[in-house]
Length: 97
Image (cartoon, rainbow, N blue to C red):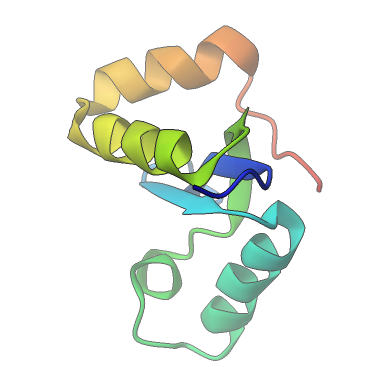
């Protein structure tokens, strides 16, 4: 089991109409990769929907917990995801990492 800090995160587009849920061990690098894919017009979900803006993240002490949480969040309704984001970021401000 890995004991490296892990992150589960939500990205959105500039209009905040699309949500992407991901998991990583390096949040700054992963956000940069998503943004680079957008600029390159890559064939990815984030590039297609211009999801490069971080609005929420959680930290975990191991990969198993983070992956489990990501899977859980992906099953949630949009309303439930919005409520979670707004509990920590009520104005949906874009977070710099």
